Length: 260
Image (tube, rainbow, N blue to C red; front, side, top):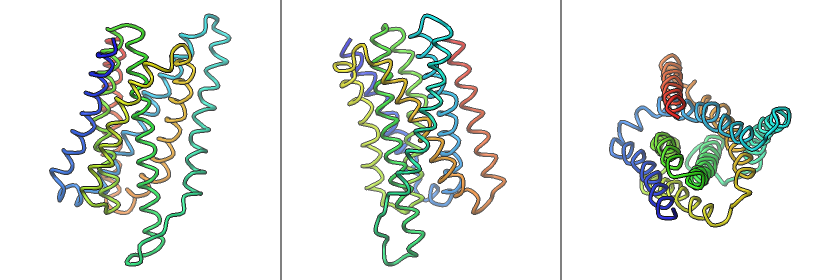
């Protein structure tokens, strides 16, 4: 069982790196289309929050409660945790005070540095959750574990694209982008292994709360930081990209739900 958790969570991490390399390999193209990639990133984050993270947290709630009334009450707490995640990242953004570079406008430098920090923190946090999800899935059974891993891998590659797109948009060097993306990727197998040995019976309660908080953080980053960047140029095309990405992930979510 442990080898399954380690192996499948590592595959999920590799999927993140694959997304990163996909963008770095086409670096000039990525820089030229940075605002479109911001739309892609925002669409992925919003779709993951509303179609994957929140529904999964609610699903865990209903599985853990035998009585419908109690489950409904607990489900309301999930949405409160989503709101707390949103507020937490708003507070974090307000408190992050980084020193801007002297060769660029101070306000723009601060904005870009802040966005990079928030993106790295939010995506690393999400990768940690992915690792936890894989570990919990295998604890429930090998088949569920494999299906969970497939679902994770399907959005880990877009996660690599998200990380790389945001950091490149903020003019970060490609070497640094790769190492930060690697950190996001490694978080998945690390969290899976730690979760396998530590979480035990408390895993469902902890996982439900963290899923909701992660959803709130994704909603905030997409709405407050990424989408405003897409308004700077080619607004119509960026809107189309955003909608298509969310519709595609919705279709994938429906397919996976039907199969499950």
